[in-house]
Length: 67
Image (cartoon, rainbow, N blue to C red; front, side, top):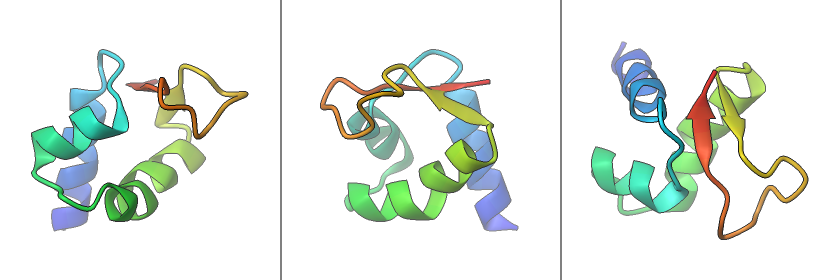
Protein backbone atom coordinates (compact mmCIF):
# COMPACT_ATOMS: atom_id res chain seq x y z
CA UNK A 1 0.00 0.00 0.00
CA UNK A 2 2.79 2.41 0.90
CA UNK A 3 4.51 1.67 -2.43
CA UNK A 4 1.39 2.73 -4.32
CA UNK A 5 1.21 5.99 -2.38
CA UNK A 6 4.87 6.65 -3.14
CA UNK A 7 4.36 5.88 -6.83
CA UNK A 8 1.44 8.33 -6.90
CA UNK A 9 3.64 10.97 -5.22
CA UNK A 10 6.39 10.40 -7.81
CA UNK A 11 3.91 10.73 -10.66
CA UNK A 12 2.44 13.91 -9.16
CA UNK A 13 5.92 15.34 -8.59
CA UNK A 14 6.88 14.63 -12.19
CA UNK A 15 4.04 16.65 -13.73
CA UNK A 16 6.94 18.93 -14.58
CA UNK A 17 10.20 17.17 -15.57
CA UNK A 18 12.45 16.35 -12.60
CA UNK A 19 15.96 14.92 -12.28
CA UNK A 20 16.82 11.83 -10.23
CA UNK A 21 18.27 14.09 -7.55
CA UNK A 22 15.18 16.30 -7.41
CA UNK A 23 12.86 13.31 -7.03
CA UNK A 24 15.04 11.73 -4.33
CA UNK A 25 15.39 15.00 -2.43
CA UNK A 26 11.67 15.72 -2.50
CA UNK A 27 10.81 12.23 -1.24
CA UNK A 28 13.63 11.99 1.31
CA UNK A 29 15.67 9.20 -0.32
CA UNK A 30 19.40 9.26 0.33
CA UNK A 31 20.09 6.23 -1.92
CA UNK A 32 19.21 7.41 -5.41
CA UNK A 33 20.06 4.07 -7.01
CA UNK A 34 17.62 2.28 -4.67
CA UNK A 35 14.85 4.76 -5.48
CA UNK A 36 15.50 4.39 -9.20
CA UNK A 37 15.41 0.58 -9.19
CA UNK A 38 12.54 0.19 -6.72
CA UNK A 39 10.19 2.97 -7.88
CA UNK A 40 11.18 4.94 -10.97
CA UNK A 41 12.22 2.04 -13.24
CA UNK A 42 8.92 0.16 -12.74
CA UNK A 43 7.00 3.37 -13.50
CA UNK A 44 9.03 3.79 -16.70
CA UNK A 45 8.31 0.17 -17.66
CA UNK A 46 4.59 0.71 -17.03
CA UNK A 47 4.63 3.86 -19.22
CA UNK A 48 3.53 6.03 -16.31
CA UNK A 49 6.77 8.04 -16.57
CA UNK A 50 8.81 8.97 -19.62
CA UNK A 51 12.31 10.38 -20.04
CA UNK A 52 13.32 13.61 -21.73
CA UNK A 53 16.39 11.96 -23.28
CA UNK A 54 15.23 8.43 -24.22
CA UNK A 55 18.36 7.73 -26.29
CA UNK A 56 20.63 8.58 -23.29
CA UNK A 57 19.10 6.84 -20.23
CA UNK A 58 22.05 7.49 -17.89
CA UNK A 59 22.67 11.10 -18.88
CA UNK A 60 23.25 13.55 -16.03
CA UNK A 61 20.75 15.80 -17.81
CA UNK A 62 18.02 13.15 -17.81
CA UNK A 63 14.62 14.28 -16.54
CA UNK A 64 11.52 12.21 -15.80
CA UNK A 65 7.97 13.34 -16.47
CA UNK A 66 4.48 11.93 -15.92
CA UNK A 67 2.53 10.70 -18.92
